[in-house]
Length: 367
Ligand SMILES: Cc1ncc(COP(=O)(O)O)c(C=O)c1O
Image (cartoon, rainbow, N blue to C red; front, side, top):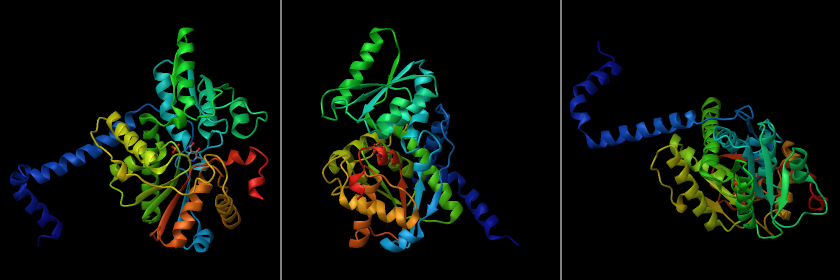
């Protein structure tokens, strides 16, 4: 007797000729090919191994009960095993490999003196035998602490633009690179926050990690939540989620720019990152769900809701969030869970790191 499987195989072979002419099926096959191509092309990119992956996916049961989320998980990218960790290490594995492939000898990047991205870049450059120049906005502060101190300790040279405008870093990076070229050196510029298409592809691997971890642990998150600054991390999660056909929503809380500006940037970065792999996938700003309302006094200025969120997470789970990124994102998530607008039973919060901020300034904001 024919079982169900062999019956369906026989049936499909009878229809094989007709199906190959079927435009809908052809389109589906092409789409599958594209997805397969995506992962193959990503795997072929050179990587400078800096850390061990995957990072843990851990249940936050006590916190979940306190904030009214039945299944709350943290994806612990703060525990990335390199230079104090954090999300930026993922992009750097691809960027540093690219710098080495291009025979560059100095990495030039920038942001504010307390930048996690710059500290991670300084570490990545140092252990890859590359020099690093860090361009910081504003003037050199009197007190050198937190990430700024770590960046210097890791051997990066620091340059201040003298302009408090964060965008002054972009021109600063260009100027430093041009001076270096004039003196016959080979600079490799990395834009502010590491937000560039190649860097975005590093975050795509985090998406696949989470997908595999969820399958293994039988977890089915409806929502992935993260903090967004330059937008590169969210862009990677958007792109990776499409490549995997994941059913979860990805939502972020902006900590610096106004939400619509970040949505545009995320869509651009995700589209350009897909293009790097030879795919014409496009993303619209509407696909990037970014919440505002939790920045408070500005980028890097702690808020009282952020401090409350940090205390709650610390005291319930022993996990430390940071005041600039993850504390503000958690404050947003808690508010949206309490108001009922977060609408998800099972949530993964991406802990992107940032703890060196605890060692910057006097910490009065924490009470
Ligand atoms: C700890 C931490 N979380 C989140 C972010 C935001 O990432 P992105 O700039 O890719 O939006 C950053 C950026 O520097 C960060 O340092």
